[in-house]
Length: 276
DNA sequence: AATGCTTTATACT
DNA sequence: AGTATAAAGCATT
Figure (tube, rainbow, N blue to C red):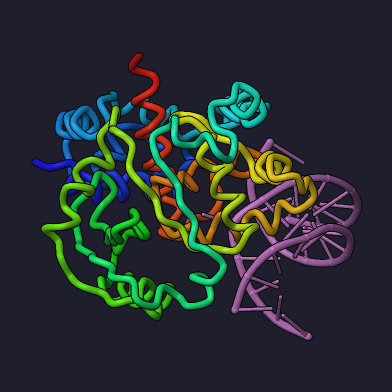
């Protein structure tokens, strides 16, 4: 049983909890709703995130999220000060990042060859696209593959697209490994967007920050709303961890590929870092 | 001019 | 307590 086939069940459990959190559903009720016995429910979580259902539920509460927010209050600053990841130093982390030049930006990737493929992941099927210079796209396609592809074509209207799952597979396998080696990223965005995305990379796995903190980190404390839209236009899901930004109130907030998926990612990472 | 992965304040249920 | 509504604020289309 693969992680990706577990995901749809995980997501439906999250959905159920979202909708019924007011009446405090029991483990049995949640299990029943996903068509599983409590026993299999237990196995499912162990397999997918390595935690018990009970821990899983705890990670999903607003209280827990608030605690995390508190913890990482000045996390962006400290990471920055430690010299771990200033603008030129991101390479020490788990990705390298390269932005398109202004001229390239205008040409929308003209002359560029992009290879793409669909792969399974712990968060459902995803569309991965790469150039010689790095990964330029990662998105999830819960419904139509077509939509994900149209979006890719849209963002790189000048580039040639080649379906080549063989080429993208090796990347796809690396991406969701806990202690993965670094992968190259190739990003296209406005100055503001690139700045915001770089700031996202400073949030460690298992931690979160709010939009306001992020705004402060890019030097525009009152631009939390604009930061939100920039975060939302992140082209490389998961690797650029836009899912680690939540509302100040502890509410997880919106996500391009569904709030349930965002929560799933946060729980998954929380479980990972709690292991140690 | 309108929109959005926000935030804060204010008013209701 | 939780939930609507309004307004402020700012990059992007």
